[in-house]
Image (cartoon, rainbow, N blue to C red):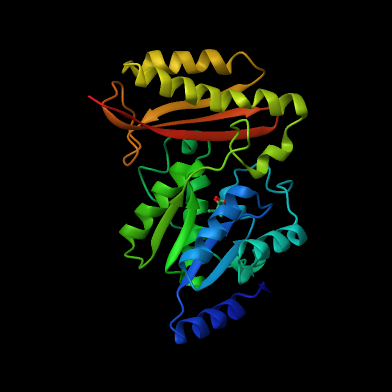
Length: 282
Ligand code: PAF
């Protein structure tokens, strides 16, 4: 496996792969790889010829005062894990190369970027779409792989790809969970052992929502109330609990058909997100 940090070197690797008619799979990550990332790399290995894993803690998607500086990083371990999972290349550019001083171009998907996680993180998705547009343009993947845990991110990137006529397929794979249900996240590292137990309320609240919907409840305010009650049992702060249309991300008040139930909860210094898609049969 190669580790490439220069954009030019990455571009010539891509040119060479394309000249040999090899398909390219890209798994964009910010590193500190966990089983969720590894499931994306394994899928990329299974369906594309060349697997590129980007590892870049992207400064433009962090709000001022967020954890950009302290975001967990471990390139040595990441390289071992990515190689075992089937990566051919790690692309790990330096921030100064991705965003030189003269940098001034940003991509923003309007409408979808301001809701859910975007409400309290107004610049976050603009940073995500900008870096993904850059990565897509450098790596020129046939398929890019994302996790369902970041459901809103996938919807937004899909819209960017469509609106900008990018010739890239996205594949969104299921959230990978610990044995007790906690969604895998690099930020789980911030949790103390007590907070790690408390963090199970995210999964429990989603599970509860699914059960009550399946039992016939369709009133979103009542479902959210049940979810809040579970979350408020532990030392936590609710950023949002939302029940929305999975494509438009617009709030629904009465459930009929498919909905995305998404939440973001602070447990200590960790802001954790999770979601499920539930279908209510009429
Ligand atoms: O999901 C992530 O880790 C990041 O938002 C991404 C897609 C790698 C862009 O920096």
